[in-house]
Image (tube, rainbow, N blue to C red):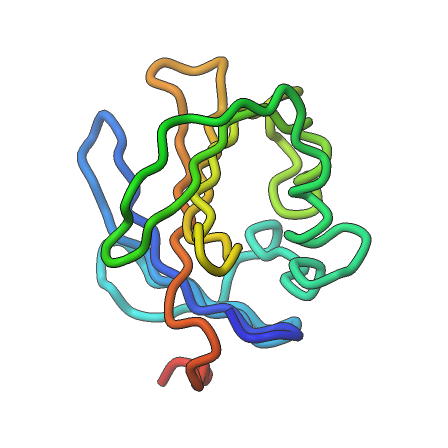
Length: 154
């Protein structure tokens, strides 16, 4: 993620049919996904793109979402790679993420791993209830302050 509007991500998707890895690039309003069958980059279909600039928005972005977590409880601390983290669990209203995924359930489970020494969010785990098995989204953050180039796919 590079502010104000660049994202490079990959997703491992598990379904009853098997698994697939999908790549995602967003640069402003332009967004691309890899085709799960061919692996080739393609423009994101209408309805599959999201306003990634809102991730950094002061009122609706990631930082403000963390203040909206409810029912927070502290779990045992955990080490992620080389980093000692504080682990928290709570709930988050699904409406808070509607700008990214409008069909989320009313309430999501959320877990956070925050660096004990630097207060940086290292992992966010969102759990959608209402489906069996539940859908789980895991976001890992690393390489803070490192220069990252996110360019359109070729």
